[in-house]
Structure formats: structure tokens, C-alpha cells
Picture 1 (cartoon, rainbow, N blue to C red):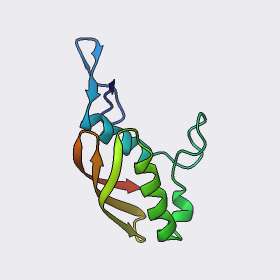
Picture 2: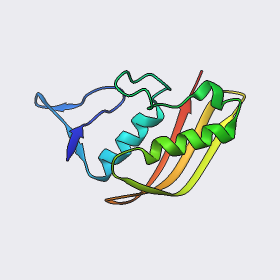
Picture 3: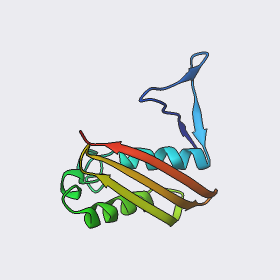
Length: 115
């Protein structure tokens, strides 16, 4: 299956045709989208998204929420390695994980800004 490629909040195209992403890169894009979805933001499924404001006060909750959203992505089988670092000074969260997917292992690192 394929999905529309999203880069820098835009839709790159080639000669007027939208670019597509598939396989492990599609799973990576879906994980990134899940991590940037705030709790209750997605009107079609209120269970999607992370409650970052509460998570900033409770890092155990935040880690559970992030893990849950990653595991909820289609194609993800398990999380093999996981690290979450919350910087209270500049309110950013560094998430690093090795995710087992149906396409193989994916090493993922993303910095989420909440300011």
C-alpha cells in the first residue's frame, strides 16, 4: 500500500503528480504524524493523539502515551528500544526508538517542540 508523501508540511510533486511513499518509509511517516497529533485533535478518532500538556507534568504518562501511539500505527509490530528525554527548559521532547515493523526494523528519532 502507498500513501501521499508529506515533507516539511507540504506535498512534494513530480511534474504535477503527487509523490508517494510506501513500505518502511510509509510506516515512518505515520509514526511521525502520530507523534505530532495532539490529544483529541483528530475529529474522526478522538483516541488518537498525545496529551502533551499533562505529559509535561508526568513523564511516565507521556512515555506510555507515546509508546501507545507508535504501537497504534499500522505496520508496527513492537518497540524494540525506546528513549524519551524531556527538556523542561525549552519544552521539547526527544524521542528515539527502534521499531519492529512488517518491513523490518526502523530506527526513529524525532524532536517534538511544545512551545
